[in-house]
Image (cartoon, rainbow, N blue to C red; front, side):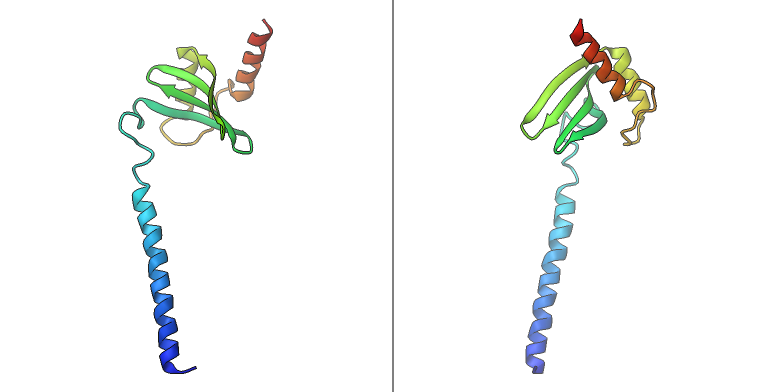
Length: 123
């Protein structure tokens, strides 16, 4: 291998590394504000809890203004499962706290919430 060929190979690898690094930093920069769209960021809409129930399927506890909703999310769409009374929703919000951990420490977790919903359907 001649020095000219080696220099060309190093140049190509440097350009490739530059493109990859540029792509990485651009996507990090471009994605910074996507979680907080105007009117929807942290003040009016907040996910209090989330649990995955299957592949690409999850159940979310969401606060929208002063109302609380239990929502199912799947690739096919989002569906409302239940609306919670303000007292119960406030308890979820206190359990989730300002940190982004999705594990409420109340005894009234998802399992008990599902049980309440099942009992309501029986009635």
